[in-house]
Amino acid sequence: MSVTLIFAFAAVALVIAAVLWRLDARGRASRPEAAEDAPARREAGASEGETGQPERSEQEERRAPGRLAMPGQGRRERRSWAQEAGFSFTRTDDSLAEEWRRGAAASGATAHDVVTGVSEGHEFALADLDSTTIVAVRRGAASDVVVDFRRPDFSGEAHSSDLRECGELEGFVRFSTDPGAAERLSDERVSAALEAMPDFVRAVWCESDWVLAQLDRGTHGHDWEAIMAPMSWLADAAHALPPRAAAPLKIEDALPSRLMPAPVPEEERSSEQEPEGRETETPAVIRPEEPVELPTRVNKQSRGVVAPRSLGGDEVPGIGERAEEPSDYQGTRVLRSQDAGPSIFDDLAEQLGRDPLEHMRGLQAPKKKEN
Image (tube, rainbow, N blue to C red; front, side):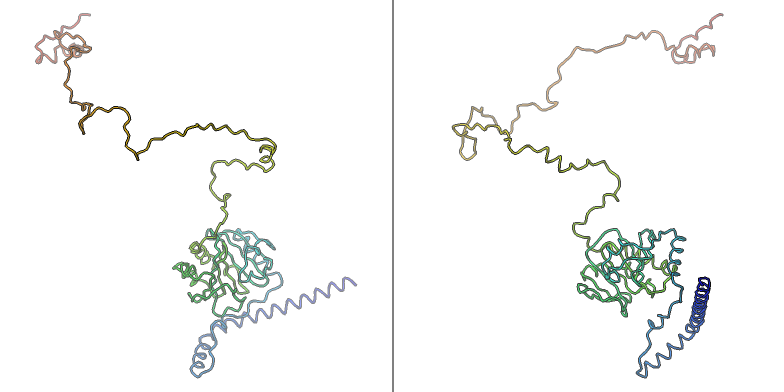
């Protein structure tokens, strides 16, 4: 009986797989035809717009149904992509949901199918919150200011009550808790990053020390790689936001320095203190009976005798004005005889057979020594 049930379940699974494969093949075949008919539909839409009928938006054309996939295929694809790129993959991560409070993360759902690593010089995390795919890039500093960029037709979670609309930028509607800070943030780097965002990016926002992006369903590895560079540009530009007040310093991330002494435990501090019953010894202060009169400039007083002298005179003579005194000291001398000439050329004179300095001193060349 059990063998019959196993064969029955296998047959049902085979039929389901065949049906899914057939539907997937139809979807693939219909997409090229839809792409070829897109210009014709745009022209038809333009003519309908002239006649007063509503024109079909490009966003509706872009939102084509994704590929049908077997259960668990997305997880396997994400794990394979993480292994090929050298990233880490985990099934769930409860700590990420605690750091994100805005956008799709406002529900507090646990992050699952999480990929973490470093790309473009920034730490990033790719995860699914419920049925929404989130890409988050960590930036260097945290800020209490939130800046949210959303597509005009974004149909996700409503923005918080503390976010105020402050204009549009590169096809995104901008919201922020501080419109002035959001205006200072929106420089050339932010414009280039938002312009480079693919159409499947529905919203981008900055909160705390993260820059997050919400993606459409059905994205794949090449889609995630395409947004890493624009996300890193936004993370660099987000340093222009005001830093968080009283943010703790991350000493463990700093360069090593001299060792700091360990803090003294409270028990040792209390034991080192003196007991309550013991009185501290204070030195006795002896005060004079009569107050000491201190000098003052209020009343003119004369203390001692001062001989009158001309103003501007100097009793010390200037340097170099005193005449030099005669001295009979001759110093140390070496007595030298000037009768004989120099002897440094004697060896040369023996070799030449004559005195090389004969024309100078008029001396005879020394005779050769007989062996």
